[in-house]
Image (tube, rainbow, N blue to C red; front, side, top):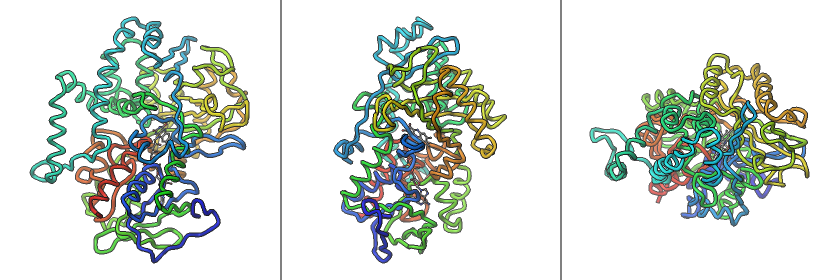
Amino acid sequence: MCLGEPLKICHMPSERLDVVIIGAGHNGLTCACYLAAAGLKVRVVERRAVVGGAAVTEEFHPGFRNSTASYTVSLLNPKVIRDLHLAEHGLRVVERPFSNFVPLPDGRSLRFGGDLASTQAEVAKFSARDAERLPAYYARLDRLAEQLKQWVLQAPPELGGPFVVEGWRDLVAGAKLLLQFGRLPREGQRDLIDVFTKSAGDWLDSWFESEPLKGVLGWDSVVGNYASPYAPGSAYVLLHHCFGEVNGNPGKWGHAIGGMGAITQAMAAEARARGVQITVDAPVARVRVEGGSAVGVELESGEVLHARAVASNVNPKLLYQRLLPPTNLPAEFVEAIGRYKCGSGSFRMNVALSELPDFRAAPGTRAQPHHGSGIVFDASLPYMDRAWHDAEAHGCSAQPIVEMLIPSVVDDTLTPRGLHVASLFCQHFGPEADWSELKPVAIERIFDVVNAHCPNFRASLLGYRALSPRDLEDEFGLIGGDIFHGQLSLDQLFSMRPVMGYARYRGPLKGLYHCGSGAHPGGGVTGAPGHNAAQEILRDLR
Ligand SMILES: Cc1cc2nc3c(=O)[nH]c(=O)nc-3n(C[C@H](O)[C@H](O)[C@H](O)COP(=O)(O)OP(=O)(O)OC[C@H]3O[C@@H](n4cnc5c(N)ncnc54)[C@H](O)[C@@H]3O)c2cc1C
């Protein structure tokens, strides 16, 4: 059906489009908005009944709505927010009172990430030395985040050929990269290399001694990263979660009133205002190829859409293994996509609650600041390391890593009055495990972790929805349940995303572009791949 015209079937088989976009995730919508602003005729076709992909708000229990998959905002690029007029379409993001609350098994807790003085006072409860070192750590991390931010809205240089880079444009981009590196002080250069090669565990151990602090910082390194925090490369995943902001406050995370769907509904409204046609319940069966070029798509309904270009918002593995026959692709590319690693080991639950969790470490069921922060249970690097080893051996850890957010304490649009909804985002669940068997086990273990800290939790449960890695693939097309459309490892980042030689939002087929999280700068609700892909498409089509 057509958004805004729910009862009318839209058929325009003979109409020639400039660009057809496969998928109405936030990146597909962002790409559509930029293309339409440049005067192109654009149509977006989405498999699900609602736009937004992994950034969507849905009812999961009668009367209870929540973000279904992604649940917290920081990485959404300020330029995208401005250019797409998201605030004018009603988007409002509120900051957390402080970043994280870490309840510990011994009844103590850490309130982390408010203003610096109060954070230092909290950290000093565990280590005076760590509290002293915190400002220097922040300064070094901020400098690293600043380096990355410079490349978020730019295509990386294309690697390949005898001169290492492909052409003049890549040479200039490569030179810019080297100059940027050269301008850093020696210590900053070392940090940059460390963060791409070291483990988060090694990096954090070199800074701090107290486990709750290392645990809360290390949480970012295991989010969507099915690996021990001591796996080389995990330090980058930590940094990937630090280059955002909320309302101009760098490094902060917040809540979109109405849930993550408020972001994508605002994007869809802007797209429609720019003349983009968005069709939901319209799965693409295959990309049409003629004379070695992508010339449109064929929907599962049989409808064919012809276009000068096709932009794919879906995981690259899904695109090249399911929507295109391998015969249309170079063998070396097919092989590389076959090796592209997907599977972030995430398990996502929404729970409807009759009352707020009553923490042993901070008693009370009336809303307090800790209820509005990101609650990371038992955070420590050894706990996270154990969870990964356990999941490797058994598919699911005996004590999984759980973060809980309770958006209803800052947003009254999600639940009936006086009741609450919580997002549970849990890590280290084997992507390859048999989830038909393991899912009930995983749910109970997640509840056990929460209930150990909040003894009223199980009794307050009114209902829930659980999404295993398998469910994330079936529901959203996230291959292997990968929340980022592919692992954020050094071999799959920047000029190597998704595959070396194809990082400029173009695959090997002429006319086929990548506008989703499988392209630079990767996953998260950023809008960046959609923005960057649109610039590349416009270069070719105009
Ligand atoms: C459980 C979970 C928690 C997360 N938490 C956060 C968070 O809190 N903050 C954050 O910033 N990021 C988070 N992320 C990551 C982030 O949500 C994703 O990386 C991002 O939303 C991906 O956006 P996208 O537009 O690139 O792709 P998607 O959102 O995956 O969109 C792709 C679209 O393509 C559609 N599609 C698939 N196949 C077809 C087909 N054959 N035909 C037509 N359409 C098709 C899909 O239905 C989907 O709508 C989370 C992700 C998950 C899954």
